[in-house]
Length: 190
Image 1: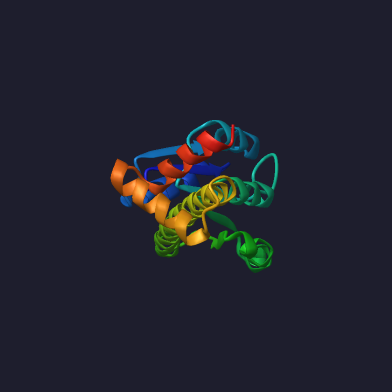
Image 2: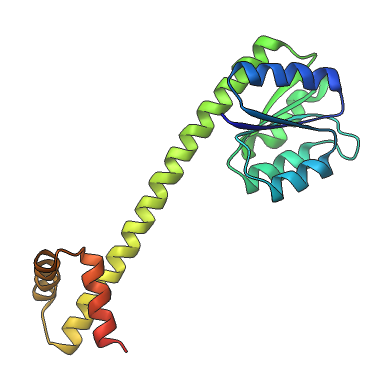
């Protein structure tokens, strides 16, 4: 965890949260006092690893900010609110993957929640990377299939012949099948 944003109008609570994050090795911690400042930072700066919102904020409650951050970033989000409304808020934001803890702030609970939120963020980033790799492979397969169709259309190859031709060209020219497919498409689809 490298970058964190704390949004809190209470300087004392922000100090406790910042100390907890520093104990986890968080390098850059930015403390903001309003939701509007946080929105600007989330939109304009590098994406944070974790966002902690100590509700209520002076210009909004904080739930909308948490939901916006959950939709636009891959950051872990923790929302801190009064004990009597914490369960209600947790029910409203649970679909967004937002963790809610209640005030008065328990340092051990905060530490466990930060650790859990960071582990979940890393897991999600791993799944996102895997998803991106799969999408890249699907695009590559589509390109190769288009090249096979082109060979079948223009050179009257069968599908197995087109497949074998692309494989053989890739081996002979020491190119990937994708590069061979792109070359075939560039030749025949002008």
